Amino acid sequence: MSISRAGRYEGRVAVITGAASGIGEATARLLVAEGGHVIVADYGVDRGQAVAASLGDAARFVRCDVTSEDDVAAAMDTAVSTWGRLDGAFANAGIVGVIGPIEQTSMEDFDRTMAVLVRGVFVTVKQAARQMIACGNGGSIAATASVAAVQGGLGPHAYAMAKAGVVGLARSAAAELARQRIRVNAIAPGSIPTGMTAHVMAGDPEALDKTAARIAAASPLGRSGTVTDIAETALFLLGDAGSYISGQCIVVDAGLTAGASMSQAWATPGMIIAR
Ligand SMILES: NC(=O)c1ccc[n+]([C@@H]2O[C@H](COP(=O)([O-])OP(=O)(O)OC[C@H]3O[C@@H](n4cnc5c(N)ncnc54)[C@H](O)[C@@H]3O)[C@@H](O)[C@H]2O)c1
Image 1 (cartoon, rainbow, N blue to C red):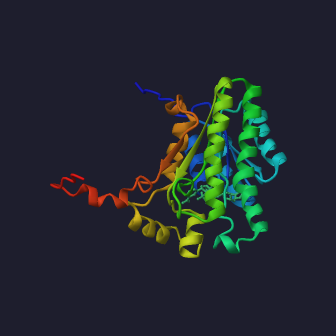
Image 2: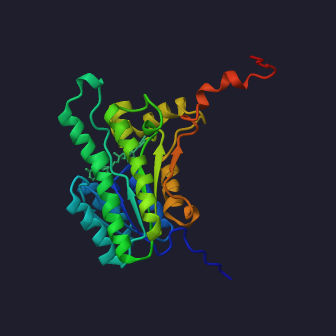
Image 3: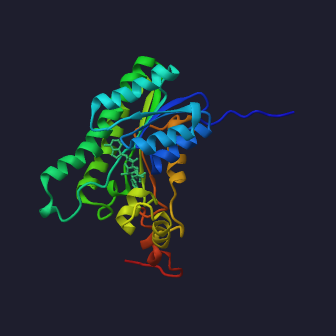
C-alpha cells in the first residue's frame, strides 16, 4: 500500500519577485516541489523564462520590474487568472545598490537604490494584499531584508537603510492586514552565495564556490549559508508551519548578529566577576 503525502505548499499559489536566480529561484523550486504553483516574476527575461520552463505547468514567467507598479500588479493578476487564487507573495527582488562612503554618495544613485529595495517591496506588499483581499482566503507575504538591517557595518548605507525599511513595513502591514487573515514577515539572511554576493566578494557573479568558501570561513557555524536555508525559511513563513507568526523578522545568519563570533570571553569557565 502506498501512502500519499501532501506537499508543504500543496495546491497553493505564490508570486516570487527576483525568482530568476539565487534565493528567489531556490524558493520557487522548493514551493513547486512541495505541491505549489508559482509566478516567477523578474526583470531578467532569459533566466526567468528558463527557471519557469524548468518547472513545467506549475510555474509561469512574468516579466516584472518591481520599480513599476503596473508590472507588479500584472504579476499578481496573472497568478489569479491562471490558477484562481493567490496565497503567498515573496518580495525578494533586490540589488546591492549604491556603495561607498556616505559623504560621497550620489543622491541619484541613492534614489535608484531605494526605488528597487524600498519602493519595490512596498508595491509588492501592496499589490499582493490587493489580490489576497479580493480572493478572500487570507494569505502570507514574506519580504527579504538582510542582516544589514539588524547590525551596522554589514552592508552599504543605502542598502542597510532600505532593508531596515523592509522590516518596518512587515510589522506595519502585519498590523493592518491581520483582520484579513494576511500575515506579513521579513527574512534577514546573512551572507549566502548567489550572483549578488559573488559579484561583490569575488568580482564574478558566477564564482559561487569561491564565494561559499569565503563565507564558510567567516561563519560561526563553520559552513556557508545556502539559498535552501532561506527558501526553507520562506516556505515556513508562507506555509502552514508559520501560520501564527506575523510582523516578525526572522534572522537566518548562523548566529552572527547574536554575537556568536564575539562570545568567547564569556564562555571561559571558572571565572566569577564580582563587580
Ligand atoms: N545573497 C545574500 O547574501 C543576501 C543577504 C541578505 C539579503 N539578500 C537579499 O536577497 C534578495 C535576493 O538576492 P540574491 O542574493 O538571491 O541575489 P540574485 O542577484 O541572485 O537575485 C536577485 C534577483 O532580483 C532580480 N531583480 C533585481 N532588480 C530587480 C527589479 N528591479 N525588478 C525585478 N527583479 C529584479 C534579479 O534579476 C535577480 O534575479 C535580495 O533582496 C537581496 O538584497 C541577499
